[in-house]
Each structure stands twice: as C-alpha cells, then as structure tokens.
Amino acid sequence: MLTSKLLSVLFVGSISFATGLAACGGNEAPPLAPNSNLTAPTTATSEAVVDASVATPVEPPHAKAATVPMPAIRPSTLLATLTKAGLDPKALPPMSKLSKEQRLVHMQLFTASLGIPCGECHQEGNPKAETRRTKIARKMWDEYVVKLTMANGEPVFCDSCHQGKVKTLDRSDKKAVAHWMDENFEHGLKKKDGSEHSCGSSQCHKDEDYQFLTTWAAAP
Image (cartoon, rainbow, N blue to C red):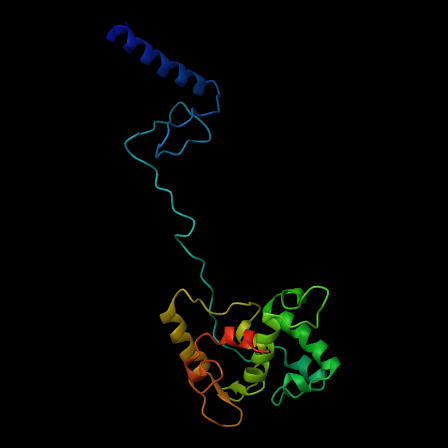
C-alpha cells in the first residue's frame, strides 16, 4: 500500500508534468470530469489558474430575444412609380381592379417595400396559387393602401409602414406595441372617406379580432 508521503509526491509530480506540457506549447486541455460546471479552455497557458469553486456562467441562447425596430409611419417614397403606371396614389383601386401590367408593377413595389424576393410570397412553380402571404398582402392593399391616408392627407403605400422589413412590430413588448399603434395607426392615419378610424372600427381589430392576420390568411 502506498504511503501518504508517496501519494503526495506523485500528486505534485503530475501537476508539474501538466504545467510543463502547457509551457511547451501543448494545446489540448485535459477532459473535464463528469457533471463538471467548468468550461474547458481552448488553449492552455502556464499562467492560467482555474478555481474549481467558481463556475463560469453560460447565458442560454434564448436569454435575450432579438428586437424588431418600430419606426414611425412615413409618407411613401414610391409614389412616382405608381404615377408612371397610370395610377393616382391618392385614389388607388382595389387589387381586383388592377390591370395585368399594373399588377406586375405593384409586385415589384411589394418586394422593394418588404425587402424580400417574389418567392417569399408566391409558391415556387405556381405563382398564381394562393398562399398565406398573398392573401394577407391583398387584404392589406384593399383595407390600408386603398382606404387610408396619412393624417395630413399624404398618400400611404406598403413602404410607409414596412420600410424594407416584413416584420414591423416587436411583439415581445406589448406595451410598446400598443403605444406605437396608438400613435401611428390611430392618430397618424385617417380614412379617405372621412368615416371613423380607430382600432375597433378598422379591419384590424374589428369585432375584437386580435388575430386578424390568421383570419385573413384562412379566408378563401
């Protein structure tokens, strides 16, 4: 049986060997013991000292969710293109009334407004097929672009809200979203026909439907 003195010598010797290996450029750290809370370093140095009593905290990947910028609604910057297509930005027709040529122009403006290619909305190989996004885009066109204007009377278009992004609301902060909607949608816009414009009277939250995008996407 080994004596306590011999065990002590062997332990000190093993520490000296590990330190010498690090000093000579060894770059592989010894494997961690099972259930260890320490993170193994990628490189070993002679000056590194690991305190086994202190575990390095590791932030979970979901600890900090990405936020979505919510810029204020602005007058459209694409009105000149609409005019060239033979359309009056202040009196745009429902999408069903657009000619084939006008539809093609609008598809190009949609991609510019949302910052995505055509394939993000249309089904590959069958562009005429209905998708969730084409249904929502049509409804937004008919309910927002056709019926609404800025509070000062300036025309609005898809880029007025989207400004190159598909997602425009940071739904992780409900209070911030409510404040943004109140300032931008309810007070920043108005209906062209002069009728009441509010959260409840609009097509967004009519009949207290707060999942209206799902409703629009499910419509035939």
